[in-house]
Length: 631
Image 1 (cartoon, helix red, strand yellow):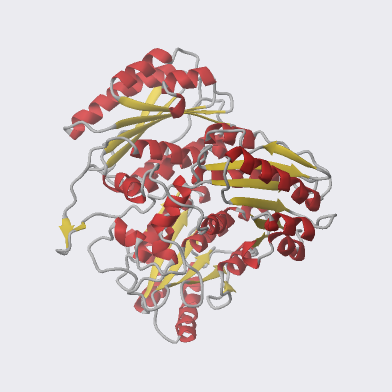
Image 2: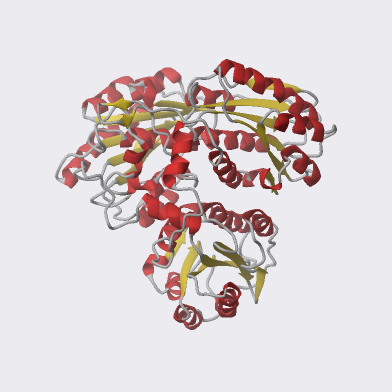
């Protein structure tokens, strides 16, 4: 739940004159944890959210709702004027007291209320809290919270006070709501991410004080960058060095020419343990950047991201100053026991110094660093990559049928099966799902295949998400060939139900060697015009994956199911590069704007386009205001 809140903080532009966020928690009685006026920036607010602890007790949601009314009144008074107000309620059980009356009172006060129920929550009570089925959300477990975020953000941004008054927000409206000059435009950011040249090194602390799971979190943080930038010899190159008693080069920037092999190298990085000598690590980096420039043959922007969890046993100020004098931009990320003064000496700029309470909270920092990197004048765009308009247009207006064929054999753990479902859910929040747009189906296989969801079963993403979440694992052997053979007729039926031909895609996920032959059925599918992607996890056989995909660029391998998500962006980009069938848009309100729901996840980085939300719209006198209430 705290991570869910943190996602909002990285999406909206947080500040006294923009969006203010508060948190209250409740059990037997409610308690204000963070008031909207307590923090003037997202960094301190994130820390406060991370520091929130669970007290336990009963479930008295009605008391919690009653508690919120005066807080919103005080919030308006502290602004000095009225702004939109929002309440997000999260609960996992039946309330022991009445919720309808206090919720109606809040709505009468002008507050928009969203109700999120997890597992044991009562649907009737959720509807009483929200007062509108469109503002009521139910998920099977807390891991499935993330997709809901985009729906709530879209709804917030559709308010008349916040955005143009049209029947439905267009992509252009979402991405271009009066950006100020204080921040970059969406086009500038996307262009930077896809087409610029830069060399980035990560210097990671591998001392004994860092737990094994924390070391994995640091690697996942690096992997996030690989899915964001366009990695390649002529674009962004990434290297990794680690340090403890002494530094060691793990990956040089010239070692890998594509993101796939680079991701594998990051995942294969191991922790050696030892002390914390950050100064030695910094000294070690200078010659690496010099060599990087020589291997390019020309100068490009250079960046160093340092991650540590403790006090350095040697001096850091002088070697950090030497790096900056060399023209290298240095970011310092401190976790838990890191010393603030040393972090500032490493970064040399408070805006480039970041502190988090634990390694799980690393992800929100990524966006700040990327934004800063993309603000550099030297990062000049070329035309080698897809534009924002091209990608967003594909995601919003194209027709396609996509099937997921997922391995449900006994070798896959229950948590891993959930990760596969979460991977599918990410696609649902990215594409515009509907009978006239993108349709998604799911088949699972073990000893024999089974159709779980047909592409024509659901006409909207909400019911489709529920069906994906409800998919259960039955176990058995791994007969991928049977699964591939099974999907051919499904695609034929899909085309017949459309009445015309659209692009067809199959995403196959497996964790082991197939007990039957896969090459022939895969070739049959491709001959049918179906693009096949093969994702192998852990024990999957590379040769079989290539036979399934038929193209190395459509074959993906990850070490574990937690690392599935970055693959999503590559597949989406590949899908969007196809000559897809375009859908004519009809105007609404007489202004030539497409009359359609905006699926804003067109940016390929796990979050909707930031600039609708992080900037102040010209029609918005001040920023919106939200209280997140959690059980």
